[in-house]
Image (cartoon, rainbow over all chains, first blue to last red; front, side, top):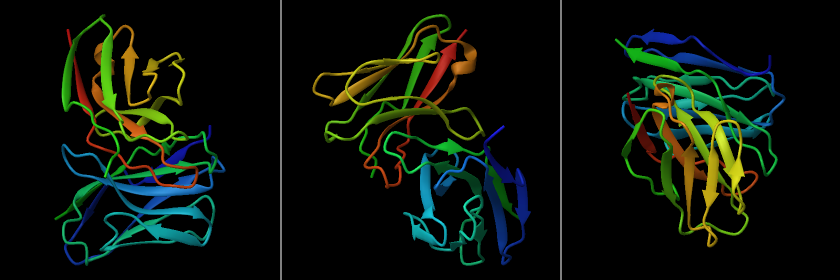
Length: 113
Length: 110
C-alpha cells in the first residue's frame, strides 16, 4: 500500500545532541512537509520541499535542518540549537496539483531527557 | 496566520449529526476549503474539500455558503470514534504550503 512512513515512533534525546527523524513516501508525491505540534496546539510548519534538491523555511525553521536528495525521502534533523525540541513531529506529502490535499505520516514523538 | 476561524470546542450526542462551522471571510475565488481531522497522537486525516458547490463523501458532507465566506462540515451520525480535532483550511494556491489553525475539538457524548 502507498503511504508515508515516519520513524521512529518515539525518540529520546539528551540535551546537546542532534537527532534525525526519518520520513519516506512511496506515493510519488512531489512536495513534502514537516510540522511540529505541541500539546493542545495546532500544527506549525518547520520546512517544506516542492522538488528534489530544493526546500524552503517554514514559520519555525530555527534549530532544524532538512535535505531532499531523493523524491521519496525528506529527513529532518533537530539540532542542539533548537531550544525546546520536545514535541510531536509530523511529516506530510502532496502532489503539486491544484486540487490535492496532504497525506500525513503517523508522527514521531521526540522527548529531550 | 490561518485564514479560517473555528470554535475551539463543541459537543455532540452520539448518533446525532455533528455540524462544525468555519469562517473564511477573506477567501479568494480560486481557493478551496479543506477539512482534516486529527485523532489523538495520530497524523491528521483528510476528510473532504470543496470550492463552491456542496460536497458529500462516505465520511461527511461539506456545505459552503453562496458567498463562500463560511462553511459547515457535517458528520451525519456521529460516533465515539469521531472524537477528534477538526481543522478547516483554505488552500492558497497550487504550489503553496498549508497553514493550520487550532481547529475545533469535537467531543462525542455517549
